[in-house]
Length: 253
Length: 339
Image (tube, rainbow over all chains, first blue to last red; front, side):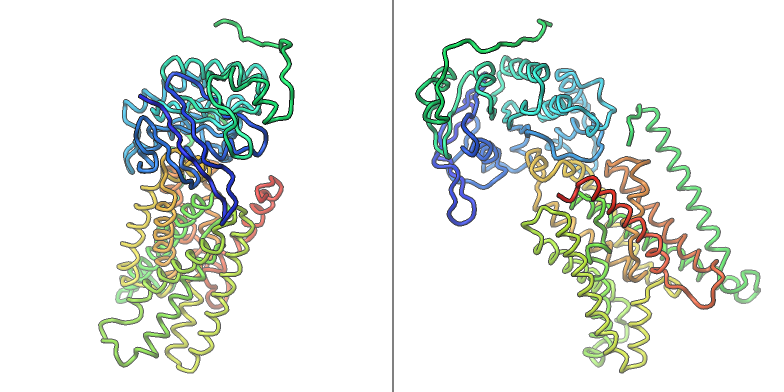
């Protein structure tokens, strides 16, 4: 298990608008790697290119396998994606949404296998959405929806997960709850690549960081090397204060 | 759909299916009981019953095909406002049918063997017309995520195909037989349709509906948008390609036997969604039966209305469908779904 290796990733829109330039970094198993940078620096674009949702050049290897060589179903069973917000506007029940995480293993006319059913149940229990199973997804709060999307990603069975600002719309309680889930997945050996906007949150959540500016990598490495005065000033034109910021925590349950 | 326990949901599904089966039996009985001729007539009674049977089966097939086609395009475009008639697919199929009638009866008249009449080739023309209209629609709207542009393009295509159809219709008036055939086909209706129509439409409807049903899970995933669906393993170009093929097959089959029946694919799935939910594995079979009941019921209504002459079947489906479409449009606009 070597995790994600991104080499010379370049994304160009139209004829000549390059938004990501020869980006290279690694995301290792059992660690959370945060993609950081100001608005428009290319964080979400890189995430989508890594997932194969938009065309790009360069290479993305997952455990030495070139992702672009995989079929859509093969890719979905090794790499799970959690969007910032789901585009689902139909009242599908929560259980069905999580079940659809098993799509890559599904046959046209067959239902879920008993193994698949068990995986779905586990994913729902792990993210504490079992009690919501018969509720329409569209009636859930933002925090509940994000937990369901994480359950769907876990249900894919993929051990690598990419997440696009999953906590941006959540309050502090749900944000911490989500972070706790990510830390549990990290302990289980998941490779996690996450786009984060809030540097305090990145500092608390991630082990490694990739700091971007205008589609270029400014700094990469352990999170305390990336969230450091010099690269932060270059990226955001702000000074890093040594004063302690507010710290929040959940009850230790 | 509100939050229901699994038991409540199963009960609701059983109730709706029970109701639909009952309605289907009622429509079948009434369709065989009412119509031209006396069933007690010693010499003609059996023939009358047989003709009513053909008419009924043709209407059931046309309704089922259009309704399943409607669910398919609604899944593809992720919008309940999409339907074969709104997107110009029905008009495309109708134009395809007219072109076949013209080509067969005028250009190739001396070349065609007598065992290959235009009626047999007509469904293929309809399927081809429906396919071409869907391909043009998808090509024109390939860069647009707005449903308004999809609907407008569908409206323009529909108008264009109807205009070309009218032009061909006026040209066809030069020959009496051809003119009659084109007018009869354009007006639609199942009153003159027989066993031949059932023979070619039934396989198309069975294959098209089964294929559509096999895409149920993919279409469920697609409800989350193309990006999420792709990340979960859906091959978007593949599903788009096959959705076009099966929508064209279903619409083509329906138009070949029933003509331009507007709004069936819109009204039926819309009416059923609150009761069977948005899962395509439930919506497809329910819409198949619901569509069959709707068109057979509309055809029955034509026979029961106390008016002189025959009202075209498409008029009834249009009168019911247009207000439903306007209500849906209002709801979508109010919900900001067209942003």
